[in-house]
Image (cartoon, rainbow, N blue to C red; front, top):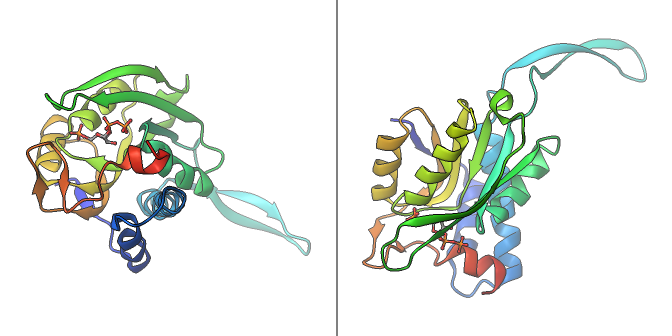
Length: 207
Ligand code: PRP
């Protein structure tokens, strides 16, 4: 099983704000960014390290630093932009990719409308960002686009996951670890996660 829920008191505290229907757009965006920073820190805690010489004002020391180039941060539009805002705060040197997907409200099938990925993404690996894992269709399609670009080291971050999405994603991409802030109960007939937090894209951007 490559799915896990991040165990962090601050994360749960922020989730209460994100879920609250009374939370306005600006607070929603800021809270989603804070959650993105926590999740990105957690999932990247085991990035390979090496040692470099660092001169402090007093002496030279051998210091741990990242061994390779930072993984690319790839946001699934639109709601992934909220998570991206936080992830880039903890990894500002990472290049950024965008994958535009929108889910048909009736069929729940995602369709792609744009993709821009860093050219060296295959060498870097990628952190895929989308707050909602509902049916899993969007995340499955986005991960397939990353693999088509030659990326093998992929991790997926979401905020709220439904059991259906977790199962579908694991079946399609068993090699990709998924870290979520919460695992919710179920999907409703319209494909919304229950209890969930509503439509993350709409709440982020006031649409
Ligand atoms: C939502 C959400 C995910 C997707 C999840 O995006 O942000 O990308 O649906 O659903 P799935 O797991 O069933 O595919 P939406 O298509 O509403 O686009 P938006 O982010 O631009 O609002």
